[in-house]
Image 1 (cartoon, rainbow, N blue to C red):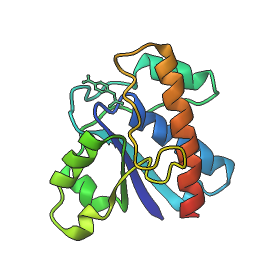
Image 2 (cartoon, protein in one colour):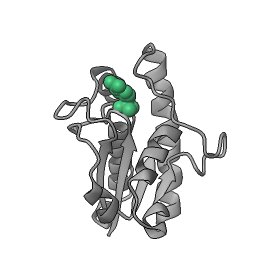
Image 3 (cartoon, rainbow, N blue to C red):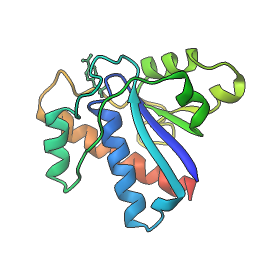
Length: 153
Ligand code: 4NP
């Protein structure tokens, strides 16, 4: 069982989508029993809220439901999960600052580390932009999800 948590700022746009797309991908491949997935955010500003309506609407247009409820990252997440996949540099720094050892730091990795188009780049935050930003994020997250599932299986 590989335990993976996706982490962004608000846990209402990027990381809930990554969780949903990863879940979909492993279900399609019949390997969902091999993974425990979750998502969370570093700022806690949207605790208890559903994912952003624009994120859910765009995903639904691709037949993907995004069911997660926003929560803030905890110290326990760092211990519990094998991989903490972060959506941008600010989130990466924040999560690294919560680590207590090199072993913990090694689990914190940029989600786009292996993106062939732009290795180690950020998943852009679509929160302030228009609907095209949400579709752009969807495509980036989908492509990188497939890369991760291929690497981990
Ligand atoms: P996310 O997007 O980190 O992808 O969930 C954001 C949503 C809300 C805020 C920031 C980022 N906010 O500050 O309210």
